[in-house]
Structure formats: structure tokens, C-alpha cells
Image (tube, rainbow, N blue to C red):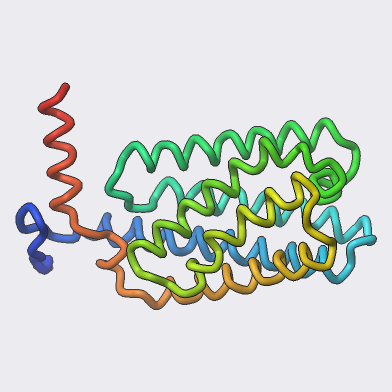
Length: 215
């Protein structure tokens, strides 16, 4: 039995949403959920047991779960501007490579290395810039209250630690707030209608046609 796809009217014509489109959105949201869960658990462990070496080793593994989840999300996210999409993916790649280098260069767990050597955030910070890009996209497209706070919060915390103008107490509050808001964001995404994350496919088709004409 053939299943008919609903026809949508876009800015540049009609389009349909395929099962592949829906599957990519499910992957995107699942990857975001994994990234948020890993980040939130890692944050809880760091804030609750900052001096426990075994716990900090677990935080390192959770960080890599966050990295992988974010990478998959950036691969499957729907963004109209291809250049912006590629920039966010490149930022993720720079941050991932920097994280690997720091893990091998410093003997302490990754979380401690980043905290004790803020200069390392120059490389790893690209990872969080890519994450902020997702928050910005979600704010622009859906006006989510949690991402409105996360867009400025993430860079302020990263830059604040890098140049040492935030107190430890403020950093802890910001980090905890980040973890909570990111979990709220990921949970709310799971119940959002799938077509809204796919966007107007006629715009993608138009931009692709324009690119082919210019080639």
C-alpha cells in the first residue's frame, strides 16, 4: 500500500516531506538529547564531587559522549544557509581535535585540564561556539525561552573563565544553569512536530538551484 505524503506550500513552491526527512530529524533530536544528557550528568558530577579522581574520569567519558552527540546533531540539522552549516561543522571539528590533543598533552582528567589551564579553551571553545550556533538557530526559528538564555550564557562562561573575570561561585551557577536549560531544550525538542524541524524544503531547492546556476 502506497502512503501519500502531505503536500506543503513553501515560499518557492510545493514540497513533500519524505521518510528520510523525518528520520534525519529523529536522529538530530536524539543526538541533541544524548549531548544534553551527557553534559548535564557531567556537570552534576563536577559540581557535586570535584575532587574525586574516579568521578572525574567518568566526566571525561561523558564529555566524549557530548562531543559525539553534538557532532551527529550538526550533521543532521536543517539550516538554510549552507555556509553557516559548514562553519558550525568546522568549529565542531576544531574543538574535537583540540580536545583530543589536550587529553594526550595533560596528565590530569580533561575537566581538570580545561579548568586549570584556561588557555586550552581557545581550541575547545570552538566546540561550544558550534553548540551556541545551534542555540541561536533554535532561538531564531522557534523563539525558545531556554535558548534565548543559552545564546549569551555559553560564551560569557567560556570567555569569563578564559580571561579569569568570573568568580568560582558565579561559574558554578552559570554551569549549572547551562546544564538545566540544555536538558529542558532537548526534552522539549522531543515533543515538537517533526515538519517544523525540516523547514521549508522549497527554500533549500531554490538555494541549490541558484548555486548550480552560479557554478
